[in-house]
Image (cartoon, rainbow, N blue to C red):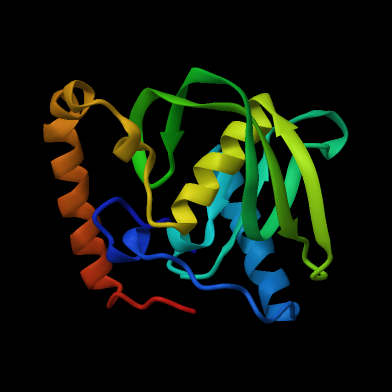
Length: 178
């Protein structure tokens, strides 16, 4: 399983709703967890591995695996709390880390691997990961949320990554699963 880089068109598409909660989905999610841990990530959205469907995995590395989630067809119902600035990175934008402002908490609804609907309130690191990964399903990257000044400072690095991502997408034949 290969992580797509910024510049790959799949990262800019709005992903489609998951309809089939089958063994194939479970297998893909298991492979995504392996990939995410391999790269020391805390979240990985389906578009990041070339699948244009609305699901992601996350693990905020809390005790008792409390922060480990499979999130399918997510919705953010409400933003909660203060806007907080915190450093973010992304497996699709390697080696770039910048502060991003997001609400401290969210009330969310999503489905689990069995299709059960879950509603919960998330705060802190879990809320940040959930928002970041949900953005991926809308074709939004964390760099889109940076100020013009920060984007200008990163322009050279980002442009190099974008070209690499476009080339890799072409090599993969832009095979996007839905």
